[in-house]
Length: 500
View 1 (tube, rainbow, N blue to C red):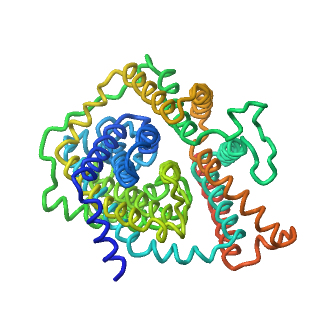
View 2: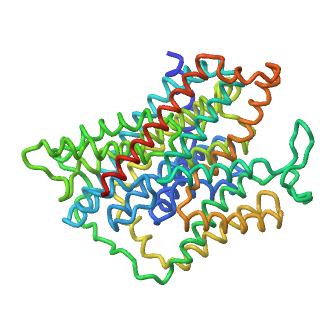
View 3: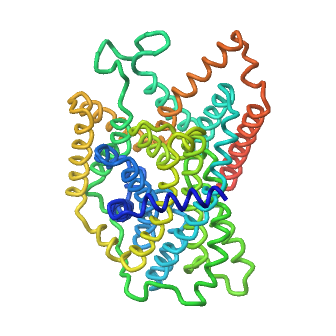
């Protein structure tokens, strides 16, 4: 098959000493950043994005991808050992993982998480290898109306799912769309939201925006909390960092079920892995109730295995959706899209034709990255946990310095530093009032795409609005969107009624 041949060629390109070093460095840095509460894979990729501008495109993208997956496992280490998951995607696996740690099974919980991340990531990446090219071929049939429908689908789905409040999600989306409009409108030459400042004629640099919202906003948020007495206790991790044969047999079905939940959600723009991880957790809990000796509530290995596999499986197929459709389905995928554009590549249907060598080498690097993470994390997870003991004042001061250096290095502009500070304050306010960040990034990235295709569709049809729903693809997307919104509203109503 062509996919196998292309993948083998990709392994030939990535298996050089230099590229392997970058993959391992990415895995190390991703895990290290992910361990720290509040710093997830999206922030790790955003922080290092400006510093990879001088690297070879393949080396940079392979390293950033390894950071992506490493950050997911790092999130779980903090959740298991301190009950403070580094990101929302690790909450589900932390529920039973921390209980296992409290009962003296911290090494087994970490091993279960590491193996689950490996299995979920490997299976989802295999699916991407075989189906992403076909998805890209199908996407060639998309016209302006279809791409506009896809963008609207992503806007509404992410805005209404990632936040407990649909209003907050839509407000975040509006902020993103407003930021995307800053600069000169190319078709008309009109200034938009520039306030007469020449430095804003080209818009706000997407690297400045991501570093400010993800990194500096979190720094301000953590600075406002330093001194509070809500520090969690770091549990010891003495014991065997592997699973017995019986424990492996217990975890294996949960790993596979979790992967089954995660794979489809990677191509659905719902903001990340929160939904599939909790679906996996709920399924394992329901199955546990039928057992003769239920273990949920006392530290269930299945309660760690399923959500962890679901999270990495979602990340794997999210990379497939990004490569084949150019559609970022999470905040981290949105930052990865920025990385591609930094090297003049536009993910989507033509990527497999124009940059096939880099795409297949990148897919090969994902397999190597999974193996690297397994090698590093099984024995070294207790070492990563020691990062939780770093004084927060020094830690976040270092992050601020790294963020400022990275932003200034991209264009040597003091205006960018001022913008970063102002947008960082915006990110802090959004965290304080529980407004999600992901819709902002999606709005900034997909906003211009939606605007361009809307103009194109309307211009080619003589401003006939029915052209937006004139094909089976657009109708299916809007029907799915409506069904998803109704399902979300019913789910929230059911959750609200159960609280009373």
